[in-house]
Every structure is written in structure tokens, then in C-alpha cells.
Image (cartoon, rainbow over all chains, first blue to last red; front, side, top):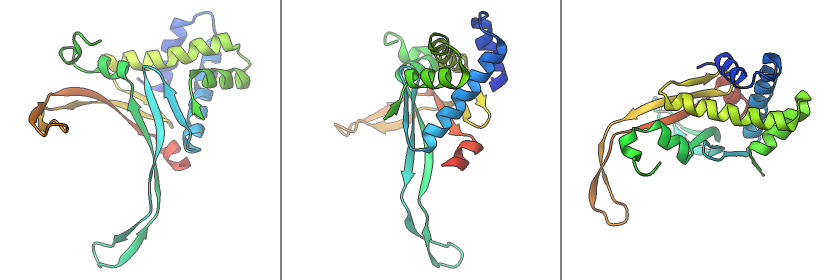
Length: 100
Length: 91
């Protein structure tokens, strides 16, 4: 499913709102989520999961070709941890039977 | 501060001029639709933000970390997400 298919799908659920409004809202939502994450904020959606920034500190590394010591700069990687409901809905039913 | 559905709905209402009542529903529908699509086994690609994909994990030997006893980790189906290029570029 792509962004435009997602927008179409949501529009079908909310015919009282125009496709244009839903499209605008979805795009702003994604921009807002991206900006919040980039600023290092944590996003927590119950039942869906949480997004956070993982920071890999700068470290001393080596150029494998020359053996030369180099400083590897700090790396910031956005991370997603699926929530319980999402995990259970995606997993094989036999793994979650009786729990979900 | 942690961003939750309420913050997202408030922010979206503020920029779009839609009512918070409507944006709350849209935020809800957004995550629910992604979740049910993933549950059906289909991946979700949100250009710029990132892709949610499904990975089939085969079973492998593991250990109970508490007791050290060997036990099998069963085959599972899990969701992974990788940030899109635009988002990675901002970090």
C-alpha cells in the first residue's frame, strides 16, 4: 500500500470529509511525525508502536584497507518498535491464540 | 515530551483548519488502516517517511536468559520499519 492508496482507503472510511482535506491532513501528519523524530522526540501510539531516535555514539574505527585509525562520527538512526496489538495481529495466529 | 495521537490531531487541526474532532478520527484511521494492511500481510510504503514491511522469521535455537536452559525460538512473522531517505537525511 502506498501513501495515495492509504489516503484513498481513509477517504472511503470518512466520506463526510473531502479527499483533498484527508490528503492534506495525511501529508501534514507525516511531516509532523518526521520533524518530531528528527528533533529526537519519541512518538508513542498505543496498540501500534513507538518511534524513537537511536544514537550510535562516535567511535574509534579503522580503515580496513590501510589499517589507519579514523574517527567514526555519531550516527542517529530512527527506530520503530511495534506495539503489542500490531505484533499479535501480524504474527501467525497459532503464535498468539488465546493471548489476542 | 512524547508525541501521542492527541498531539498529532491538535497539530494537524491547527495547520489544516479542520476540527480536532475530525483530525482525531483521521489520526485513528491512519494508524488503524496501516495496522490492518500489515495484518493482511501487505507492506505499507509511505514515501519520505518510511516503509513498513513484513519479515518471516524462521525458528532458531535460543536460551531462557533467566535459567540458561536451551529452548527453541518459534517461527514468527514480524513488522519492521525503515525510515525513508528524506527522514534519514533530516537526522
